[in-house]
Amino acid sequence: MNQSRQHLPRWLNRQEQDALLQVVEKDLRLLYPVFTKRQITRRRNAAIVIFLLHTGLRVSELLNLRLGDLKAEEWSVRAGKGRKARTIPLNAASRKALAAWLQVRPDNPTDFVFVTVERPHHAPLSLRGVEQFVARYGRLAGLPRLVTPTMLRHTFAKNLADTGAPVESIAALLGRSVEDVRVYVPLAPTDLRQAVEALAKTENGNPVP
Image (cartoon, rainbow, N blue to C red; front, side):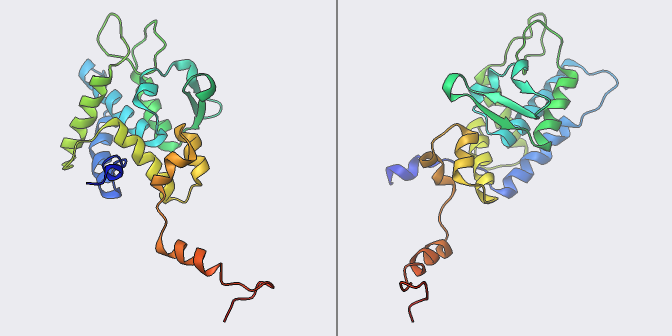
């Protein structure tokens, strides 16, 4: 098999996304007079899946997200550090998911956005823990392949490309180079034809017969 093909990013198609969100949003919409630890955990997990799918954050960035990184007045989130830091606008879906989690987030001294529900420490989540519940949602949705946090990031990028977002915008949102994100924007045959047809011009701009 071609080595480059083996390393192509994997994303969810629209049908798979719909199936996944149908399962996830049930947990996000859970309403109880008093939330148990289990119910809070389910809402947190659902919020994380939706947040990853609509922000394209690396899972490491999500785990290190602090309350101070949330910019409510701008509806955005700051991700990354130093020269690689970037600001990602929050759309309606990511805002709703974040608000649903913050509504039940345990009060504790740590300022990590996503924390464990168990007392007394309410520690930051682990990478393994996030991978496990993301995969579980994929299984519940009946998806045939393993769903990972990285796959949700690739899906975010692919969705942007499918809406016609410029590669420069996709690169800025992902914190990657323009060359890295071109894989999400394959050229259609019509694009190639238009490029070739553009060569068939005379000096005054009229098409060559």
